[in-house]
Image (tube, rainbow, N blue to C red; front, side, top):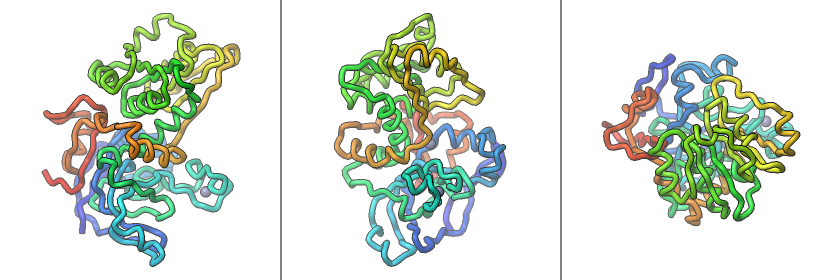
Amino acid sequence: MMRALVVTAPRTAEVQEVPDPIAAPGQLLVDVERVGICGTDVELYTGEMAYIDQGFTHFPLRLGHEWAGRVVAAGSPEDEQWVGQRVTGDTMLGCGHCAYCQSGHHHVCPHRFEVGIRDGWAGALAEKFVIPTRFALRIPENVSLTAAALVEPGGNSLRAVRGAAIEPGQKVLVLGSGTIGLLAAQFALAEGAEVHVGGLREGSLALARALGVHHTWQLAELSAGRVDEFDAVIECTSNKAMPALSVQLAKPAGRVVYIGLSSTPSLVDTRDIALKDITAVGILSASPGLAGAINSFASGAVVPDAIVSEVIGLEDVPSRFEGQRGPDAGPGPKVHVDPRKVS
Ligand SMILES: [Zn+2]
Ligand SMILES: [Zn+2]
């Protein structure tokens, strides 16, 4: 048996003893060493996540999709070389057969599982879990455990920055100072941009400056009639007014990247996009950015560790879903979990 966090009903979660998972052929069994919790996990915990209404997922839920660990068993003899390797993995487990999967877009496969999110694939908030070998990625030993468990949000942020097509010296605004925003700011700095971050919490904005961001703004300052200021705007908030503001703040012929999701419709007037010749890009998943994020963390081009505020045990996860923070938590937006830690 092993310990796993189980969300049994909306706003009800507990650590339970559950049977050890077993790697089937084509799968790897992983000892989980670190897991991040994010906004998607909170929405699943509260029952507000759209997939629940859409029937793509249901209680009880086993969460955890931002993880790092070590392979302890392989379900197929040809995968034995994975045993002992340090890994993370793709969240989006495409079917492998449809036109999307075969053209490299498995993250939008209509038949996909999402680890710890969709269609009942048990997540990493547990001592062990299994993943398909074809979705595992090796992590070099010189990457810290903290950074290793930031590869998944890192892949999302890297894709957002790629979507902004930044050239060195260009002025880029990242809206939002949560995990995705701060990581996007770090990847944009690595591209040589002049990086600005807009947010609400002064602690996060101070952290952004400490990470090298050139200028930070309160969102209210940015919405006070400013226009045409940035070559690219990367929208990473859950604020429904920010997508339209992003178009307003982008220079004509600039780019706007949408990765943030609000809980109610976030409307944009497409006339503003057309009349300014804006290129707008939407980003759903980290999948095509995971390898690049690992490379940036391994080379030291991006050092993301300061984004993590605390490392807790499984027992403390429900309190964090309810918005509490530990007494020793740092200023970073991301909470990490070590499932081996018993409090
Ligand atoms: Zn996440
Ligand atoms: Zn598919």
